Length: 286
Ligand SMILES: Cc1cc2nc3c(=O)[nH]c(=O)nc-3n(C[C@H](O)[C@H](O)[C@H](O)COP(=O)(O)OP(=O)(O)OC[C@H]3O[C@@H](n4cnc5c(N)ncnc54)[C@H](O)[C@@H]3O)c2cc1C
Image 1 (cartoon, rainbow, N blue to C red):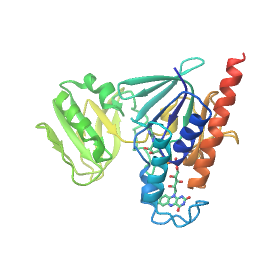
Image 2 (cartoon, rainbow, N blue to C red):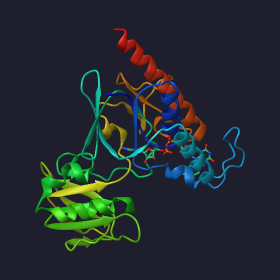
Image 3 (tube, helix red, strand yellow):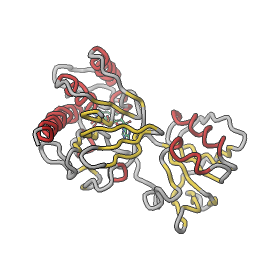
């Protein structure tokens, strides 16, 4: 079991990983992206102290180099659930499960809101995880809504299991080789059903009938990821110690609220690790 699980590979996660290493804690570092896409996208960064006029690409390289030079490894996995199992946490990523005494959420913020019905039918026909739930839909009719190209092998895996597979890419240039894949280039606007999801509705008013829907994306709303996690206005509610309402779970960076800035993310990553270490010491002395 790890002392700390850090989820998210942006500046907040990088800072948490560096400081966890310096404080000599055992930790696992998981992120859907090897480096945050947001960092690489910045044209010119003017407000990072000590690094005037650095480009986003340069900052991304510097952050990666820093962790690698300390022997820190990032595991490229999307976390689909964090469960409190009484004094420790179980972290699900694909078909893997990790255990940690504390968790630091460095999830960033999502640009897109969940589609109507997405949260309602999650676990009732809607899944975020191909490898966890794919087998449940063997020979069934499914839709796979995919947010970016990095999930195309998972689409092929799901199509290989399903009877019919409607693939809904939310990006250009889809490249999927599966005979039963039917590509639909329309945005989903609603999922509906009864006890389980049954239909996907598209923006043009058309719909399809389904037994299940897979939504493949690199980020999952925090309150869906962690049951019972308190959020305020879409952000994870934290105090100055980056503690959430769940003892042992901390949060840092954009996911805790504005301003959405690198140095705030990096600072909170540091604070969150120190709070996690204090929590671990207190738990050990009980
Ligand atoms: C174009 C652009 C320019 C910007 N310019 C500036 C600037 O000049 N100055 C400035 O201060 N800020 C700037 N920002 C803002 C800055 O990028 C963010 O504030 C910063 O990246 C936040 O870091 P973070 O670690 O909190 O989140 P992010 O960088 O968003 O990283 C979050 C990470 O968590 C991962 N993740 C999320 N959910 C999961 C999950 N369930 N499982 C596994 N991994 C998960 C994501 O894949 C991502 O890698 C800019 C942003 C953009 C988009």
